[in-house]
Image 1 (cartoon, rainbow, N blue to C red):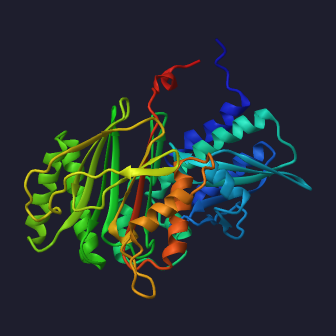
Image 2 (cartoon, rainbow, N blue to C red; image 1 turned 90 degrees about the vertical axis):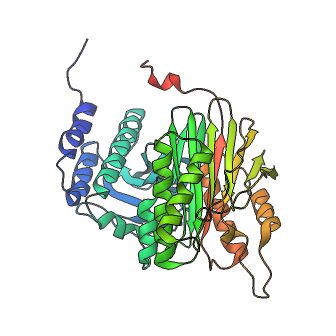
Image 3 (cartoon, helix red, strand yellow; image 1 turned 60 degrees about the horizontal axis):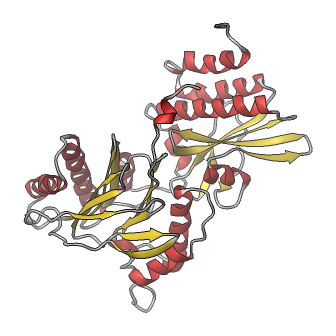
Length: 400
């Protein structure tokens, strides 16, 4: 067995060996140096902005800092949405755009120029981009610079609280994919979502705390914290509701409340169970069209001391999607005072053309369509999509 260090291992090994003690401001120069070793130049690191509309350049020594690139209308945006490299021939070579994937969550895109590209370059740069994404996510916790690059407008304190609370905006494994969107990006307060994949069960929750500003953000923080605590204790959906209800009532009194939708999805069988605490009913999307509401008995919002909730159930088909949303999406009023309403939401969902770009791209397209249709976002509005695919992932643990 040959254990000697080859060129590719040396290149990636430098990043691995230094990553644990690398100051955040030196990440960019090291990336630029690494890319130069394979003949690359004009390196840019483009991060997704909080509105999920642009890829914005990360400043740093050795990096090319240009204008933001639209996610929906650029080569960088195409690489981002498809989670696949894009190559653009130029007069002086080939401009490559490589998605930066943290697991399956899209951090941004790394762009660079090579004189020419072969399969060895593609393989090595794809792996380098994965390692760069991991470094960016790790170092994000140690600095404000990445946050500042992604923020294109002033952000309220409540919104900063909510963004710090969120899990990754998307997750994809062979059996299931999730994607979430929050609006208004820079002034969100009471809306949030959370999820966790524990063995074969996807746990998910969407919440909407009453009110606005810091009060709503604080209540949402307590609600999500209570949900996570209950989820990690391994209790049932009904017991999670009771635990969250008690936490909100004890902290804020019985005149405050949080609506919530809590779900468990068995990613092996497709069996979906949920508890609805005053939330709009989820929509079942099949073959890219809304097939039905996932209606069921509701209980009082969290904090009102409701009775033990009834758990609803439905077995999904492979490829089915479930759309959860908060009432801010459908209760927006137009200039003449007419509610946007669920029917127009369903019409927008049905108009989204399948592109094969994945659930995250669908969520972004739906969010942008809804913003155009509504014309304003005066209340918090959240989308959370789940796609069930079934199958197995055991092959990923086998070395070929």
